[in-house]
Image (cartoon, rainbow, N blue to C red):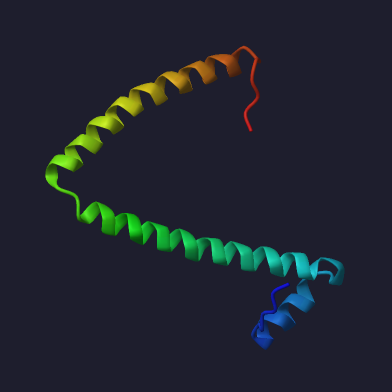
Length: 92
């Protein structure tokens, strides 16, 4: 169990807009989404730092690998699209 103090304005607005039976789930969902976005921002910053330190050779090697993956990804998407058009697979 985690206890969080929220600003009064947010609590009052939540109380007006959300049925009592769903409030805690909605608040938990909003907080979870916020914390996930904070973590994604931290991960993105670590990636930016890592990629800024790479040598030109490493950058070229990464680009070559991505080109190979792009070709494989394109093939996979074509297969999936063909299956969908035949009704063998449903899109999520």
